[in-house]
Length: 507
Image 1 (tube, helix red, strand yellow):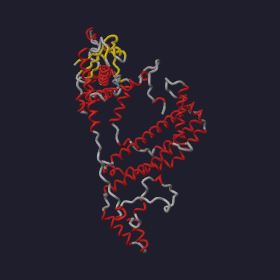
Image 2 (tube, helix red, strand yellow):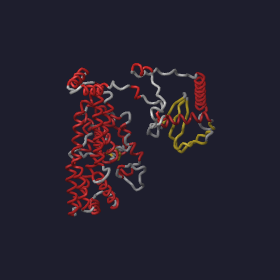
Image 3 (tube, helix red, strand yellow):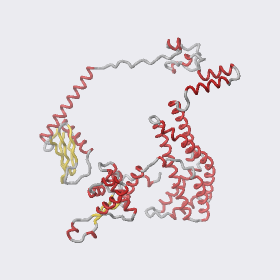
Image 4 (tube, one colour):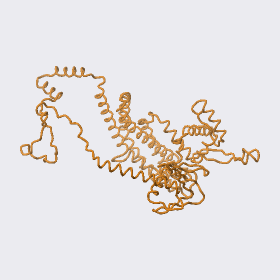
């Protein structure tokens, strides 16, 4: 994992652009995907994406409406978007869109005062939108192992060695970057493929026909990938050693010299490319536990799992092989036996009725008798009468009788009713006397904190002129209202300070 894939906890003071987004800001980018009008937000962002593809970056509200009309010609669901202005403002508050003032649209002083705004994707907002679109557009075809990529990797490694030996810095940069991209994509594809196998195994419990429809393609795909990986693994390791022999330090310096990332220092670029080369070596040239070996082992294990799953599905469904067909094949095997001894051996293997079943019965506590103790000296094993007489294992008995402690239940119920009455009384006291100008007792403090938990859990960004949050319980409602300054509520546990908020409890 590179440093770029780790979201920062806090923005640097000197950062700008996407680096200025804190962890909370980045998580807020996905609010549109879980909002009540998530479908309208999605179609509006798709309109912005179409405008961006046509080099129309800055969009006014009227431009967004026009793009939505064009989308509706191909996608009727886009007509569900109503008034776009509140949607644009919400997306700007979540920093998915950037809102700026466009003074060129003002034809007179009145329009200038109306403050015409234009909107465009923020860099982080566009990435969040693309991430949602990638999830919505994901298909089963994305989860597959790429066996045809090995010849390209081998050719790139040989070209990298030649470029490094010739001192071609730009070619070294291109080949190293291509190798890093191909390996990252292959790792992601492999991870998705094995996750897909797990999903398919879980789906088998409810829809076995889905697995039976894909089993042949899966087995053929994995076997071909394993064969190609086994054939190219030694060649790739040899190519990595050849490239390393031309000088690893010089190769890293060439790649860092041609790197055009402006906001990385030379030392950071050198370290980044050094880590990428280590990843390539770890993939192919590690003598023990390389990623290639692990990938091959995982594929072999996956083939075994698919075959075991196929066997379970076939045995459960008994599809294609009936009981009559099985008995006919068994009878044919018996008639093909050369001697009576072979027939007896086949009978023993097929039915297993020759050995006494009670021999395999273990002790109730196996650790009580050492394994090296002779049968003549060990205590006998207790056997069920049905097993000795008829050879059948004893059946399971029904569940035991449930013991109920009525006195304990009544005591807990009385305690619960008492606590509910105390909470209702404290809530009524809060609604009647208010929360300010006095010291709240223990019961009132517990009710107040519970109401604040409910209110803050449902809190959403809102205008400063309306209530910020509210919650209700025990017949009362707590409302948090924005105010200038701060307010304080005195309780027996201490003072509760609310910055910029005032709370009110009403019936």
